[in-house]
Image (cartoon, rainbow, N blue to C red; front, side, top):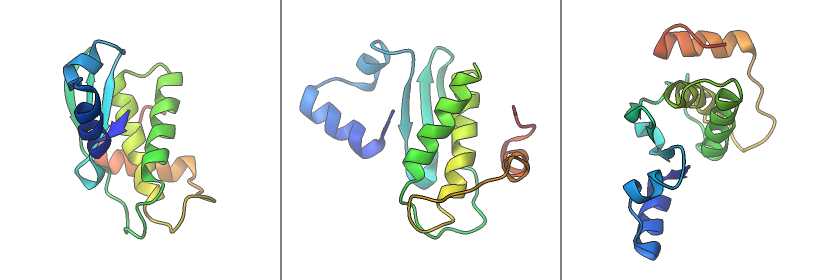
Length: 123
């Protein structure tokens, strides 16, 4: 998993493409900030839209929150795209607060935001 800037730098330094990386791992996740993310995995390429936050205060930590949500989804054995939707939802809460610590999200709030953005939540 890397953001679009990191992907470009990685390509410039190593010469490896998205396709090359995809063959080295089960999936490649590229985050694109407020444009969402992409999952390039066993199911092909899937564009993941961003979940809409109530407000945007600070994007710092959104990538880490996304990563945490993705890992949670994968530990639940969700398919890569579904885990990425969970990640997008969690990241949307991170941008609503300043800083990178002390974020709290209730399961009810998570489920509601997921429902509002993507349909029935997997949790």
